[in-house]
Length: 181
Image 1: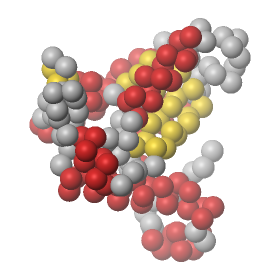
Image 2 (image 1 turned 180 degrees about the vertical axis):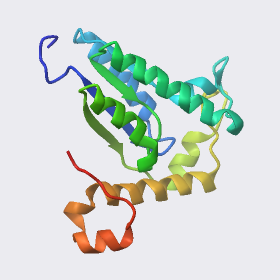
Image 3 (image 1 turned 60 degrees about the horizontal axis):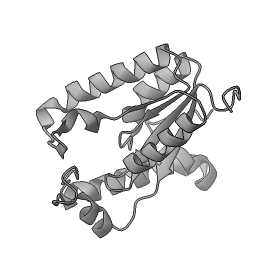
């Protein structure tokens, strides 16, 4: 598998509402890629908010932490890591563009790994901080509902060419133009 070019130079963009299991899935992918003898790097802005095993979100640090995450991602591409994961929510086009642009500039194929949102109450339950889950994010229900809405809107944009007539798509999203590779 190490010499198989299909697995080398791949970026995986996780795309999911908090509480979907994207970080758990990234761990499984990481284990499998390493077992196959390939190099892998996982970049998540959430990691910068971890303090002693607890998730401590601070909105004032979000932009800086996203910047640091992007710089680490870019370093992995420059080092030629076989598989590089962006484990952010990646719900809107502007959130993914810096990562996908860098990936393409460095000759990486880009794969979006979409985890379809579950029912809102399941995301709320997954986000509750408990003694067993001190690293849960505690995202409020109203914000999770916004994330689900954003996921669905972005999904329409990505897959709209297949599912929606182009004219209707352009009317609903006049400023967003997608280039499908």
